[in-house]
Length: 168
Image 1: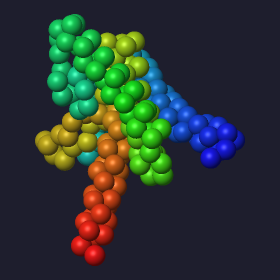
Image 2: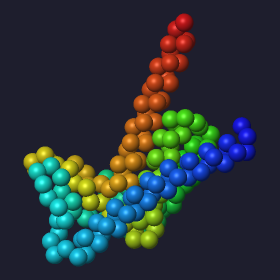
Image 3: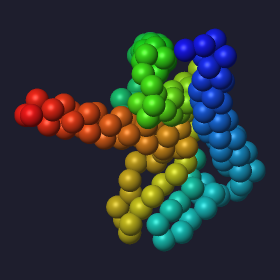
C-alpha cells in the first residue's frame, strides 16, 4: 500500500470519528442549553419519546454509576484504555470491521469527553411504551451500540464462513 493510500485512509477514518464526535457534542450542548433555558424538567414529551436531561455517572445506559470520586476516575481511566485498544484494533482491521470500530471510537470519545469535563455524561433520549421506559441514552450511545452490533454480526458471519470451509 502506498503512502498516498495510507494518508487517504487516515483522513477518511479521522473524518468518521470526528463526524460522530461532533454530532454527539452538538446534540448534547443543544440539550443542555435547552434544559438550562427551559422552566420544565422535560424538554419534549410524546407518546413514545421523551427528551429529558439526566446526568449519568456510570457507563452506557447508566450501568455502574458511582458517587465515589475514586471509582469514577478509575472507570474513566479504564474507558480511556479501552478506546486506545479499539484504535489499535481499527488500525489492524480493514473493511466493515474497521468502520464498526471507528463508529464505536467516535461514540466513546464523545462520552469520555463529558466524563472528563463535566464529571458525568448527559443522557436525554427516553424511549418508552406506556409506563415501560428503556434506558435513557444519548447520540454517542446510539453509535456505540450500532458499532458493537455490527462487530457481533460480522464476527458471526466470519465464524459461519470458517465453519463451512472446515466442513468441506
